[in-house]
Length: 298
Image (cartoon, rainbow, N blue to C red; front, side):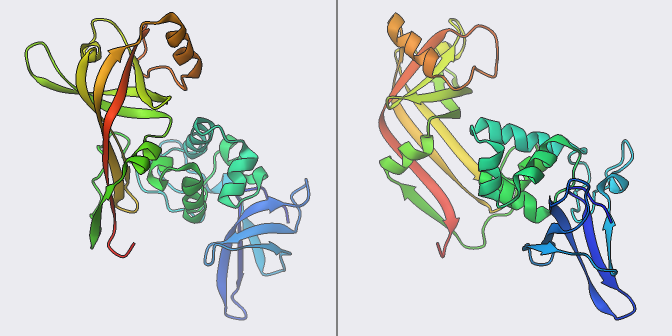
């Protein structure tokens, strides 16, 4: 018997009538793929060391992958129709890990899996179990749906509301923590013709100020020397909960060369919109408010 990471180990004995059990091989102890194996069982999500007997057989992942254009899922992981093609999940896991600045070893420890299996998952077409994806999503601060790639073109919040939701007002310190260091937020402003506008921007938080880059003459450049509102939020589709933070303050253009150089050095990302955006706008919040939706019993 030989296996690879991600293969499915099935134990069933029709002669004795023992219940069928299956799991995902998440660890190998020999380079040639011979037993024993570390197996994560689908019925308990526990990992155990297994020395397969005569009632065990391996379903190899490469035999379970769909033909081009099909939406068939691999073993142990029913994939919703229309979601990721083989390999997409691993690419999304790797992208989320790199955004957080985590190594594979750190991510594997957070997700309670072997680093070798995470390496395999990121680099090979794989069909991890839903339980594996739940742990990875939790370790990477994202959702299973996001790792599948489902709903990428739909607005968030289309899931069902909690049966007994509770709306909690957040204090300034928790609002500051949720703003974190960077991300995507929305800035409100008034256009020259008096119409309101809300524009998403890539932002950083530097020394307590919200900063973002724009281009002179752009819509967001109109925030300069104006009172504005800035909003960030997060929605957890799987758990039907989320939070939002609203900052209100005066927007100023950063002009001092040394201050601009400091912002450039500390920026986490370049604006997703591309083009030359060398004009820095700083918002120093004078008020921070926020709300969180949680289950009533939390």
